[in-house]
Image 1 (tube, rainbow, N blue to C red):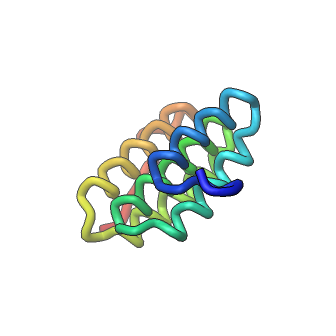
Image 2 (tube, rainbow, N blue to C red):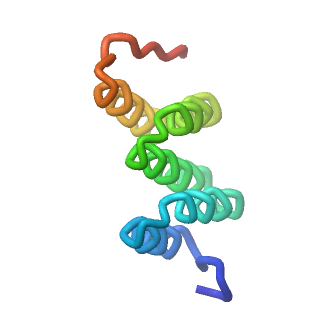
Length: 107
């Protein structure tokens, strides 16, 4: 880490886990989103944004998580990995709310 910001995406992921373990999920999400804006590759950016959205889901902020994941779905149309992870996370959100059959994603 350099200063208060993670030096790379791996450090950001580790730091986010520490924040979450200490009950600071919102801080983890904020830090991951900031790190995503500085990511060196589209895959790094997608990974960080998905991790942030998954943190929101774990905090039961389903609307926020869904909004983030749908934005990832649209932004990373050329990344099968990002889209698959976003789809899986969206499925989990709908499953946790008891409405799995209602999920619809546009291509």
